[in-house]
Every structure is written in structure tokens, then in C-alpha cells.
Length: 346
Image (cartoon, rainbow, N blue to C red; front, side):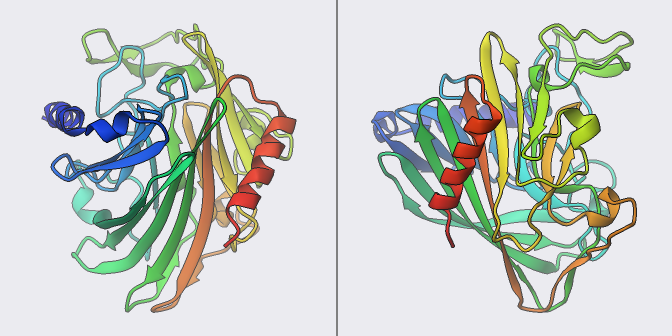
């Protein structure tokens, strides 16, 4: 049912895309019927901001390189042979958290137990500004507790940019507490997450469940790691999940090769964020997440944050996601990070 709904939405999006989307520059095209905003760069679809009723949070789906290669996992929305079928709540790219006043917003995929979890609902999209090298979209989302009460509002400016072999998304997120105090209890489950394509995972020898050629979940006792060669690198020189997970850094990249194309995904944290530099919940199985709130989990109890917003209080977090076609060195990433600081100053 979910897959059929997705196919219908994608069909609607394709049919509804106006001729303006095929022109040069960066253009955001709203498709109300499909419940999404489509982002085109020089006429090619880069990603879509999707607020589908079938999802418990808005997502960016999928993410593509400048050559059109998809770098995010398709499961659970589409069935692709060779993909893992774990963690159905890891849907492409998103922002949420695992402990808001004791309620889990992270693990909600709409299945059994979801009635005890929180959900994030898109409430408004506005302020579209298209341009030659960038486009902007302002959105508002409501964080809803299991009893239906709005606990927090998320106002976000999404800026989509283009450059040579480069796709960029700036997410400037302002969180505002409602009438009650909002406590982000320390949890590893958060916050700005991307679930990547199989080729960007680290090689593994553990038995897992994957999608077969017929689209069915299949237990695989022996891992096939052909073409799987993802490598994490942090600004502090940490390499791979073993060294990088739970550490703090201003940026981290994940590099690999997808069907002959060298690619690198990066997440940048901004010095104006109150929790800078962020912790990294970066797993070898393909979860790539910046977590500014989970100090206790990452320090084995040595530090507790419990980031708190008093009623009506606001906090703004600034992140950049990059999708790069081609190899990316530490020095090149530092240059891209410096540009991030020039572009995002508020």
C-alpha cells in the first residue's frame, strides 16, 4: 500500500512539473496534490521536500549528485535489490529526535507502537525564492505529542545551492517551545539524519536482512560487500565508524563510489549553534547523523546536557548538507566549510 501510494505521488509530481522547472537555475516547484516541493537544478530534479500523510515527519527524498546518482537509501519507500531492510524510520534525509519530554519522535515509522510516539506535521510552506545559483523555501512544522498536543514548532529556511560537481542544502532550523517546557533528554537517536545507499556503507561480515530482486526481505547469512566501500572522515581526522562515532567535530563526510561515480556526502555544523561542535551518530550500516543533543550517550555518562527550551523560548540550529560528485579531500572539505560560514552568517 505504501509503495503504491509513493508511485502515485511520484507520478503526480512528474505530470505536474511545469515547463519552468526545465529552465536553467535553481527552481522550487510546489505540487500541492502530491504534498511536496520539487527542487530542480538546471532542469534536473535534485530532491523533493515531502510532507506526505504516509510519513511521520517531512523528508527530503531522495538526494542526488549533480550527475543524477541517488545517494540515499530507497527503502522503505521503494524496493531496490541489495538494500538493507532495517530501521524503516530511516527515510532518506530528515530532522527529529528520540526523547522530547520522554516521548520518542525518532523511531516512529507508523507501525505498531506508533501511538506512543510523537509525529512532526508540516503546517505551512511559503516564501519560495528561485534564482540562478540558489533557491529558498520557508516551511513550518508542528511537533505533536501522542495525545495530540503541539509541544514545539519548527520554522525552517531551506536553501538549495549549486556549484561545480556540487549540490548543497542549508537547513536553518528554529525550534520554539509551546506553553510547556521542552526537554531534549540525552539520546543517541537524533537529529539531522541521512540514510545512505548501500555502496556508501562500511563493509560488514555480520548476517543481515536485505531486499532481493523480487523486492522481498531476505536473510543473508554471508554479506556481499562488492562495491561497498564507504569511509567516514571527520574534521578532527577520525576515520571510520569505530573512531568517529560519538566524537565531536565541526564537519564529517562519508565517501565512496556508486556505480562508477566517486561521491561524498557531508554534514556541516555551524559555530553559532549553541551545542557546537556537534556529536556524530554515524554508523557503518549507513546511518549518517549529526546529534547536537545526546551528550550523555556519547560520553558514557561523563556529561549530561538535557537541552531545554522554556515555554516560548527559541533556539536556532544551522546545518549544511553537501552532495559532491568526485573525490573530496580534507583540504577541499575545509574550503567548502569556509564557504558555508560565509554563506550562513545569522
